[in-house]
Image (tube, rainbow, N blue to C red):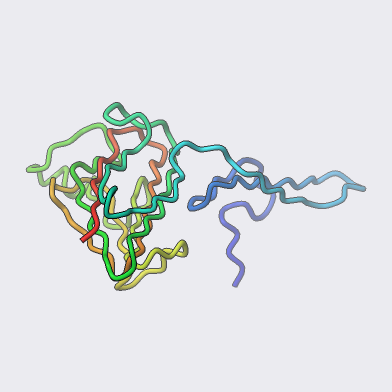
Length: 182
């Protein structure tokens, strides 16, 4: 079965692909004599796609969504790849995670039903505990969205870990995550 990514048929427009620091552009014409369609990929410049090598002299740090502590821009994307020394692991601690809405009422049933995003189809963070960039579902990856309490912790299974942030169409505070080797 073909996965059209929402760009099949006669629909025109733009589709953002999340998970890399490349942008894809698809173009198709209905005109007679037209060549058909084309897809082009271009590298995106980003200040928050980083490969972080952790060492004994630099064992920890902080990852922030764009513009943190202010609201991140719509459709923000960041990706970090962390590597610890062999035999060590990495611990992430979410100090704050606020995605998908500007309203935060954590003790409200209405809030919990609407904004905890059981499907995570708006803004989200995906963490791979093995450093994979494929972010496959299962015991090695976590998809987080909505709101998380301070102190939510994820530990890598090896000396590698990766984290993908996607802000979605709604602006909010985003995230602050500390990392350290253990």
